[in-house]
Length: 333
Image (cartoon, rainbow, N blue to C red; front, side, top):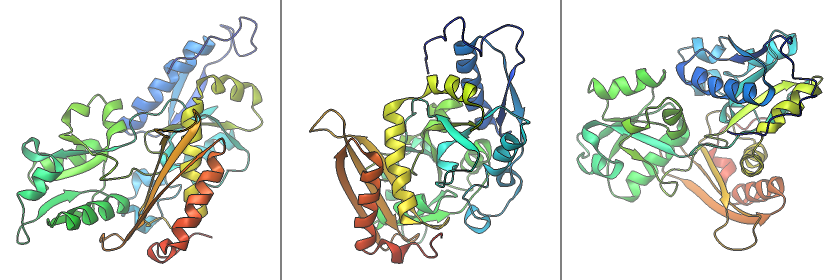
């Protein structure tokens, strides 16, 4: 996450300037992510960055995310603090951001993305295939996740292999989720590989799941740096951390999500990557919409270059025409 230092006469520099206040959730993962960004911003500006811990509704509620409305529950309190001026900028896991642009705020930077894939933490060092093969209809492998998207794809993949799986809804931080496996309550859990890596715990994963088996959530593995739209000086500073290929990829993925108008409980996966063939700026976007039980899945891909938002809207239209709307339950308006 390297960025060139600012010119010595840049207005954000100067030892007498107060620290920049970075708003962050209190979880270990959020603090680790925010600490990385704080170091990067300090390196660019020469200014101290202090972390301001903020509790969001998603942190205190114990209900399933599909019940409380996952969109924005980890974000709203941070955005309120930005608009109130109690923090200068905030760091979010980009997959948590609502797709609608917030009034008064700007997405100043999207740093280089980590591995966007999901990771399995299973008992006895087993891979997903090995774990499912050891189960049967009487005692299927029990895999925990709070994500309808992961449930849909686990169920669909197991059915395609003629194997049995039981997906178990769970919530909690990384320690809590992995603890279900260590205690024997679950056979495995699925987590984001990027989060494990940022915590220095990727070695605990028994498999990083290939995107051919499980597409990630739109924006997974990427971070978002937001600040007030009126603070153009700070926005320009944060822009030094922006990674153009990452921003293009997440633009395609999030435009698709917005065009689908997917409800918070809809299993939607999407991943944009450079195309293996074609022009240098060509991008492939793969996406999936399904039912949680995995019984019905619509999966498509499209390739384009130069306009990631058009690519996202175009693929969303193809998915809807193929019946995706009927799989998502109540759509957002």
